[in-house]
Amino acid sequence: MEVILRPVNDQFMQEVVFPAFELGVVNAASAFDFLLQHLQHDDTRVSLELLLDNAGTDTFFGLQEDRWNQTVYRLLFSEWLKDRHGWILSDAYAAYAGPWEETFHLALCLEDPEYPYFDDLKSDEQRRAFWGTPKRAHGLSSLLCGQWDPIPGFPADQILSTAGTGQYNPGAGIARADWSWRPMLTVSQWASRLPNMLSRLLDRETRRLKPVEAPERHEILDYWLGRQEEPPLLAVSFSGLGARANEWIREIGNLARLLRQSAGDARGLTVVLSTPAKRRDNVLPGG
Image (cartoon, rainbow, N blue to C red; front, side, top):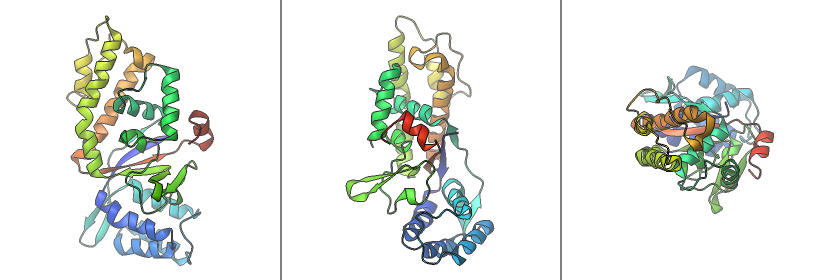
C-alpha cells in the first residue's frame, strides 16, 4: 500500500502531539518529558523513558531510532482517548489504504471539475503540475501530496520521513512532508460538499457517454452516498474510467465513506505516503 488515510482525535493532536513536536525540533529531551506528562499507555511510556535516558540535548532531526519511529506512528495513526489520568490508547478507527497515484487521481476526479480524467496524457500532465504546486482549494488532493494547511509550527519532515519529501517555509506558507493532517472542521466541510462533488462527477461522465444511456447512474450515487451497501454492476462501462470502472467506483465509495465517518465522529485525518522516492520522482518529477 502506498497511501494510508486514518481518522484521528483532533484534541490529542493539537494539545499533545503537535506541542511535543514543536519542542522536539529544538530539544528532544523536553519533548519526551512533555509526552510522558500526558500519556498513560504503558508500552509508549517505556519507549519514551528509554529515549529520554539517551536523548541528551539532541533534536528530532535525523533521529533514526526504531523505538522513536514506532512511537511516532502510534502517536499519529492510532486512536487516543482522554480519561482522568491522561491519554490512553484505544482501538483504531478504520483506515483507507491504496495505491497512491490512483487515490490521487480519484481525489482529483472528485474535487476538480476541469480535471481531464478521461484522457491519460492530459490527466498525467495535470497530476504532475498539481504535485509541483498543490492547490489548497482542492483539499483532499493537496493532503495526498503531503501539503499542510494550516502550516504547523514544526517542520513535519523532521518528524517522519518515508520517501524524502520535505519543504518548510512558514513565511511563504509552504509545508510539505510524507505525512500530513487536516482538522475535523476541514474534514466536516469536505464531507458536506461530497454529495455535490459526486453528483457533478456522474453528470460529467453521463454527458460523455451520450447518446449511450447509463442506467446505473442513480444506483452509483446511492452507493457513494452510503444509501446502499454494494455498487451496481455496470451494463455500460463509464468511458472515462476505462476497463477498471467497477474498481474505481468502489474506491470512490470507500473514500466517500471515510470522509463521512470521520466527519460524523468529529475526527480529523492524517495521511502517510510510502511510495519510494525514486518511483515517485519517475511518476511525478519535481516533487
